[in-house]
Amino acid sequence: MIPGQKRVLILGGTRDAIELATQAAAIPGVVVVTSLAGRTREPVIQSENTRIGGFGGISGLADYLHQQRIDLLIDATHPFAAQISFNAAAATRHVGIPRLMLVRPPWQSVPGDRWLEVESNAAAAAMLPELAQRIFLTIGRQELAAFAHLQQLWFLMRMIDPPHPDARIPHGKLLLERGPFLLENERSLLQAHKIEAIVSKNSGGTATYAKIIAARELGLPVVMVQRPAIPDGETVSDVRASLTWLKTQLNL
Ligand code: NAP
Image (cartoon, rainbow, N blue to C red):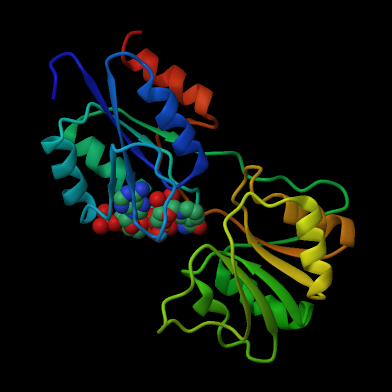
């Protein structure tokens, strides 16, 4: 650790975090460390300054911030990764360093969309039997069990890595793919599998939005799972504003 350098920890797992880390690392005097949870087998890693794996709760993260002499933390995790965001809020408060949240805006429905907004995967599962028989499930692999009891329905399930061999998963077909996804491909996918409804998290961003457009075009309902609550604190919605915050914090 070189005197005068400022050390920034970016909690990642999103495309915005990758872009932010690249641009922040280009600021003279700034050292960027990106942290990933280690959920995907082949994560997109943009520099050697990446650490992988949980910290061990609030106290583990606070210890890490202290030991690594982190000056600033930017929480650029996915909007549905709420636990790490609350941990980051508590740990930075404990250690006494500034924290920013980079939260991309949620998608908003537009005319033609047939959204059914729900609070949770369980609520999404509860409405499916009345809605459709063939469903495109795009919630990742970690929460598939919420739909596993719906044995009379058929699911096309898209995720980056396969589910754990012991995981309870719904009946249907797995599609192992990483976005971004193109509109024409999403349209063909829905048609080829005779999909009647989509279940999606309201993740926001452009990389996975094409399925929402395709659903609109085809007149399909989208069961849209709303975001969990995140901690209070200073929040921006894009990489550029994060860099402005960073430079302000560093008096640049
Ligand atoms: P979560 O429920 O908020 O966090 C669960 C635990 O995972 C945390 O307590 C922490 O473990 C560890 N963790 C999460 N993010 C971490 C990070 N960036 N670095 C180090 N440890 C991390 O998180 P999640 O929803 O499982 O998401 C995990 C990762 O996947 C995040 O980086 C997120 O940005 C990314 N991601 C999530 C989703 C989603 O839909 N949830 C979608 C795309 C990407 P300890 O308590 O041991 O520190």
